[in-house]
Image (cartoon, rainbow, N blue to C red; front, side, top):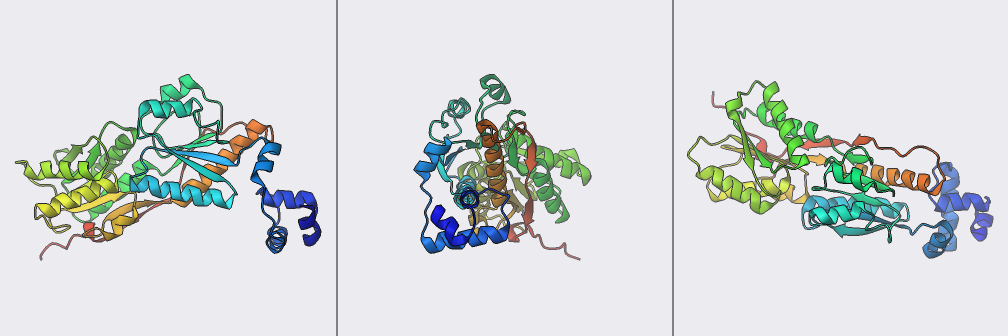
Length: 339
């Protein structure tokens, strides 16, 4: 660092602040130091830094299912954001298992990481309170674990309401909510569904909820196949609680000869990459995964500074909603009624 400082004409402390990602460095100074770092070929010795600082330079990301597109995309966003900070991400899959999630809350990953980003789907708030973990941890997503830790994700209720409002605007009145399974996420998305239909004056007799066990393609296919084989009137739209369910629903509709969106419109949440390539392309809510990753890492760093005694501010337990947008594609654009 002394060589870099002399080359850039700054102090060693300034070089240290730049390579450590300290925020209070002017853009001009940061750029000058970075040029010197590049020209001299300086590389951070992360092992030495860890021995000096007591930090490993790793954070852990725990998600339920890496095979599900949403969580794979989330992992990629976190890895990219962490790389910009010189941090390596260790990824753990819990398979949505309650005991696996509980072990994480008990510090199961803190022996190898400075903090944990945790997307939980089963562990209840009571477990968080009982375990009382005391290490940097930020919850990702909408699963409610109480107010012990900060949580970053989209407003689930608002996202679901936005999708259903769009379907109602297309003239749909018998909208199926596909995805009820007793989870916190499912309850929130069902609430947004109810709010949108109530505000539109849709009669409760047309509020249709189709349960599933898991939010995957196979469950979406099976649930919609059962729905189509029933004796009651068909819906005119399906609001799938995630895109994996929606993809399964599209396959079931196609297998039964149901035209989408002419007969039944379909929309989902997550806007995973395959949604743009289904037949027809799927309307979906796109969460800002980059914003989720950046904010979560910032909150994790703030907690780490409190733990290290570098910051006396109290640990934040707030819930932060990140942006989302509705991406409208052919699956929900119904033709206008005949004159």
